[in-house]
Image 1 (tube, one colour):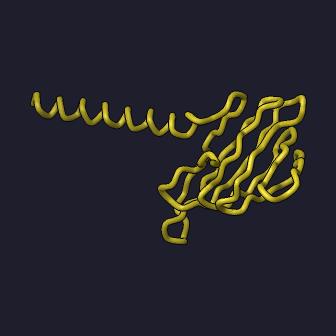
Image 2: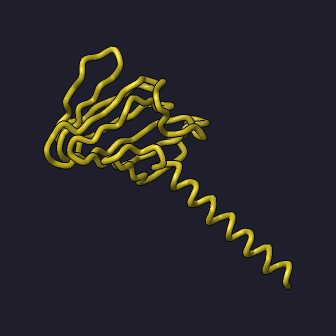
Length: 137
């Protein structure tokens, strides 16, 4: 009985630790004034790929530095505006009600140039098991 209780406590501790580490992984590298909230994650019919939908919240002036994703990002600006810079292309300002697309592996950054908060909903079609976002070198 004592061994079973110890096993249950150890299992619970590992589960809690894994959950905390998982939560920290998604926000540990978040710059000041930016927050990404994962809304859903589902396997796709394409083996080794998944779709992740997330809400990005930018305070006025907040920026996400240059980074990449292991797949495409399909975005919709829900509120405010976002200045999107994709390497090799001129910067584009995307306003509430407009969409954007970032090809897989492209170095890009985003900034809220406005005086109000900006909210973006993005769906990422990515390789399963890879980090959702990787800082660019």
